[in-house]
Length: 244
Ligand code: URA
Image 1 (cartoon, rainbow, N blue to C red):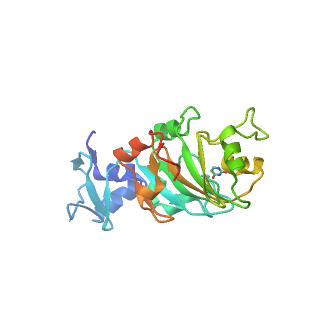
Image 2: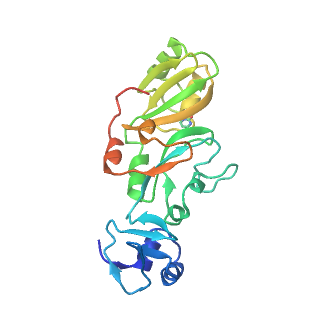
Image 3: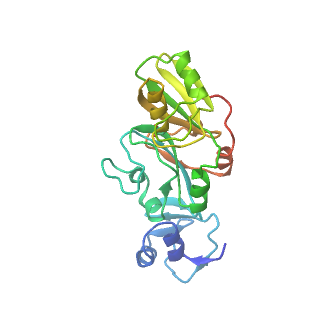
């Protein structure tokens, strides 16, 4: 990683315009090893550098890979219209540096949502060719029956799809709870598949993507965390350790 001045480093991490970052440094709000650094000429190797801005600790990261436990009532779109956007749950520098959701969950769907500012990662994760199962737990209005589970596994026809869509795993979790794993990510897919099979989804949570399970991240609703190499590797796994 090439060396950079502190204002450039801050700018790359989402602390605002170059001018604003220069001002933060000049005003002594940025510390490294507890000492304010005000000299804008010093060049740093940014790799893994730890610093504080207004006493809040940060670590330099070329890109960020985040997991959010999305609460209900937040939109994943970049320009939310009816509900607050999921980006409002992140610190401001994450928005400045261009973090975006990887794919979408409906505003009323909860659970595991990935976010990143790495366009290649977002593109690779969102590719329809990527056959990584996404696991959901749905609550249903009517009882979950063996016929419903069988229909999910056999495939149901959605009216704007050329062929039936099937779950790669499906099991009953309770009288009105069903676990469903899908390899595609079509619009409202779980809800529409349940409706096409004659039931109705009343609540939906995404509990895993590949081998990365939400419960293993220990995030309360609305909380987020950085994902490091081991967790990013789990996204590639098929997660065939059960649907919940
Ligand atoms: N399927 C849905 O119906 N909604 C989601 O948010 C995700 C999958």
